Length: 230
Image 1 (cartoon, one colour):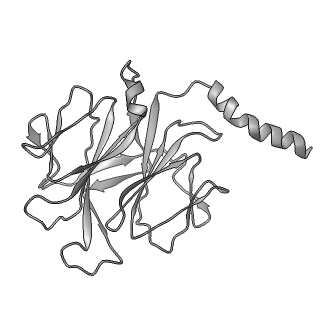
Image 2: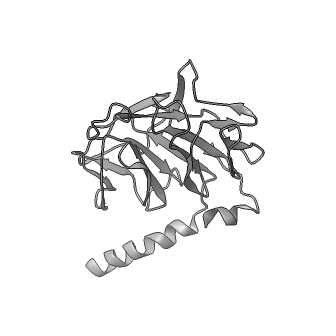
Image 3: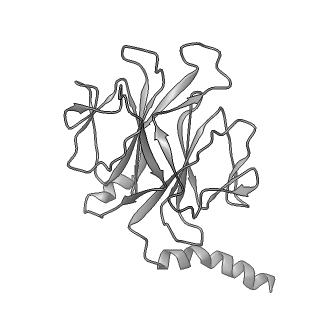
């Protein structure tokens, strides 16, 4: 019996690959900050994920509805570690409890949100400010770092999260662009605020925005997508 069980486990990746991958992906925002004492792991038996500082957790399910192992991503944003992307195969387990997986439009996260460090003692860099753009970016959009900065390439439908690493600074300083899409999730370094189609966005906005969790990205494959997976 044990031999057959092992064979079934080995066949799981083949079973999953034989299924038709969904065109969408779901992006979950955990509504509470994670602390260094928390234990986060990929699935009930998966490896542990280190929490370096108080962090925002974003979990990306790249095959919503799949019950077996499939590609997922854990994104942790903190002052100490910046934006980290960790590959996964399951749902998140926090302090021995399954979280996020299967939740249906349960709550909204308010943007911008602040994540405060429990380690840093500097007045200027004690917290970071995270801005979530509440609309998909498309290949026809032009995203630029600042009014005269470098362009940031967009192909597939993408969720933009802009992280201001030094919110109290008035001049150019370190920022991060987190770009989440079905074929690829990446971080681009910046020095300014985002400019989208010639208009400044996110930085300095007076009104808070509500972003529903999970945020669903609808994906339409194109012939250019093979280059994004590299």
